Image (cartoon, rainbow, N blue to C red; front, side, top):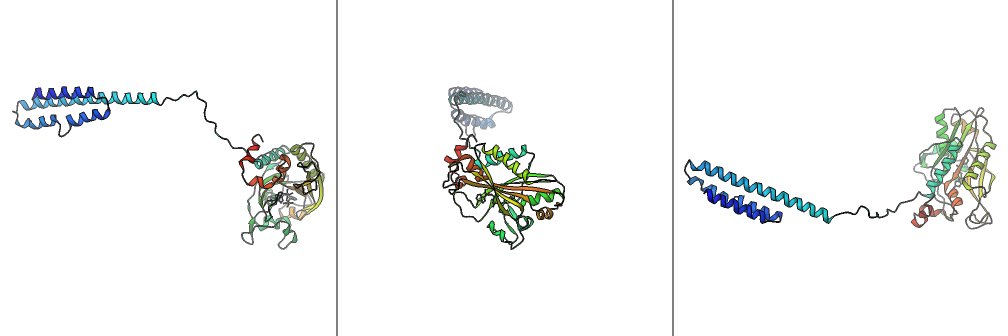
Length: 344
Ligand code: FA5
């Protein structure tokens, strides 16, 4: 029996050595050490042995099994390592090859304009404030001296959710919200960029959703000349020296006196074209001295404080700066349009 076991061991080891695939090695394991294998069969016949022979054969059988198992493990490890080596060689990566370029997006021109305007006003001592796009009737109108049924509410056709809640039609409600936070103590010096919404018909210069940047400066002795100086400084820095601006008397219920500011049209150089509706000018902002009623309603004493405010249309600024002939380009997301602003 001893010889038979040793012969089986040598046979199995020889087959393991011959095998050059993991599957073949596993087959040897099954056929020699498995339940139906010859070694198990030999062990089953041990019952017929004498009591003295049984432990000796048992020990030999264990040694044979261990020898075969050790050989199996050795071969499997060697084959697995060879497989890893083969894969590494096959899948070698040339790290020196140039990478595939990733198409990078660009800043939206409106974002670029907002950031540039913010930078200019931060340089003039303003800070940036924000307010909600869904606004109450109180802040959007009443706190700005536009009581319910005031005819000037028609100047801004609105999207209402309920009688008291609407999409803000301008960034001016943030004037009242900010002044309330200062609790009657100046100076207040903020600019407020944000989206606004109106039931306007879309055309080359109008959109039902657009952006505004509000400005508010409240302190002792703020005068109209301060407003003019700040707007001129802004226009020079934003448009450059070749563009002209003009102030026209106007009306807003929340400012007195009020003005509208136009910039000369860059598409036609002021001669008149489709964009400027043949006037040579494009209106970019409304402004004025904060109405004493508005100061009062937001907790400021109009006898001690005065202020100026303005609200500019961001799309109009961008159109003038980059000679864009239609406001709708900003909202149709045509990559050919947007990719022109790579360096902006
Ligand atoms: C206002 O919205 C006032 N709140 C501005 C203001 C603020 C006046 C503070 C005084 C003091 P107006 O409706 O004129 O005003 O709009 C201001 C600017 O928004 C306009 O000059 C224009 O540049 C832009 N604008 C107005 N309507 C549209 C529209 N439908 N599409 C694009 N831009 C618009």
